Image 1 (cartoon, rainbow, N blue to C red):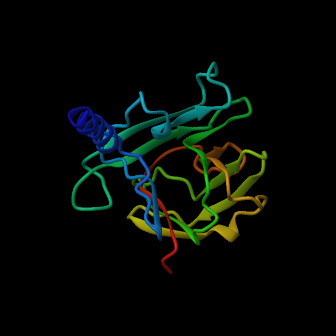
Image 2 (cartoon, rainbow, N blue to C red):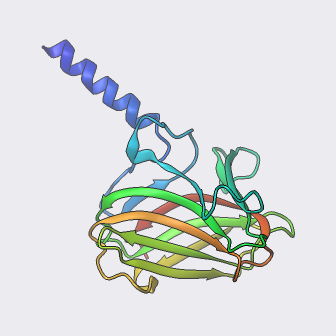
Image 3 (cartoon, rainbow, N blue to C red):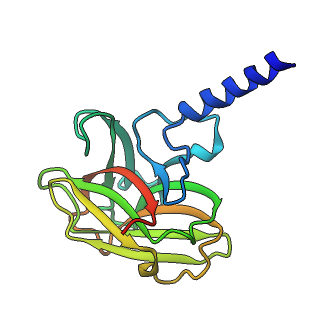
Length: 197
């Protein structure tokens, strides 16, 4: 029986360590994604990816990959997001992290690192928090640069969402109406929630 408990503990530890987006929750910190390890497709709470308004429209797309060459810290990886909303049709797409009802109400702000690639990055992007009550909190991030920048967004700045107790999804959105240029690349790293000022 003791060996069985140890075995189950080791399996749980392997699942936890093997997933780059598993929450590492402390009282003042909740890491949503650090992108240092490949996500484990078999563990649902690790799910992140890209989406398109119309996957059948080849004139618009959003792709992602991990980069160990371009990163915000000395080692590890960042997430490279390449977007294209330059379409004759209505176009929007982006990146998501599934949060499965996480209660983020006790945190003060969302933090992450971002940079654009050379001259091919948007002047602004839209960031959203969605809950299971179909509320969508929206924030427009401006002044993206070609060097790494830390972004701190107080959760009260997300307009349109009142209930932060069951968050379904974190989303980055590129829209054809507001994203200039309409094709480009950004890098994202270390997305987390914190109470620390």
